Image 1 (cartoon, helix red, strand yellow):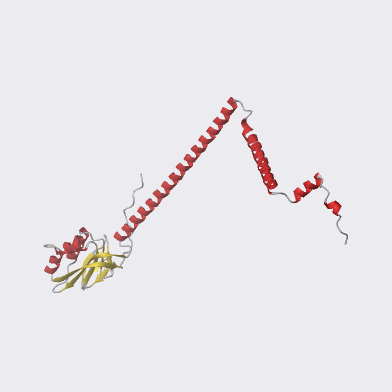
Image 2 (cartoon, helix red, strand yellow):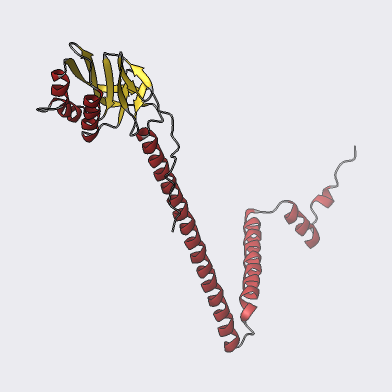
Length: 251
């Protein structure tokens, strides 16, 4: 293996060799200088681009700039007006939907009330149970009708007899052999009236001086009244179509 030449190792390096050596093994100071130069170049590029962007309206006259500003202001105003219009439409639609829901709820409530009063649906609620037993003589139909009227005045909302007949405004009582005929059905004693309404008011209507209980007892019947927190009335009436009455046309 050839030995290195001592004379060549001691020769001074040329400028080109020193540059190549510095690029291959840069010193710390050289690295710092290179980073600073890179940052300065980046800042110069950003400044140039910013200047170019800011020069968009540099050639405009004052009148042109005013026209541009007016156009922007008009566009902004139209946008605000459109937003307000859309918000008004939204609020109106929400209000219409709420009104429709309220109307439907009110109509449903009225339909339910009419169905109860017409005896078309089973109902449940507090009230009284009145049991009338014949002791010395049959119960008179007119006396029972008077009792029903007193109960309705006191707030009775639903009444059934012997769990079979639902009493409505058109219900009729007739004296027959062996009992009472109620809406075409013959019922026999004891007669059990389930009445839904304010219990205390119904009891007072039955027990007032010279009231229905006294009249029934005078005819030879025994009357028992019990207030109940919940009564189920399952009997329903058949809907009747009027023969003569018709709703008036809306004006």
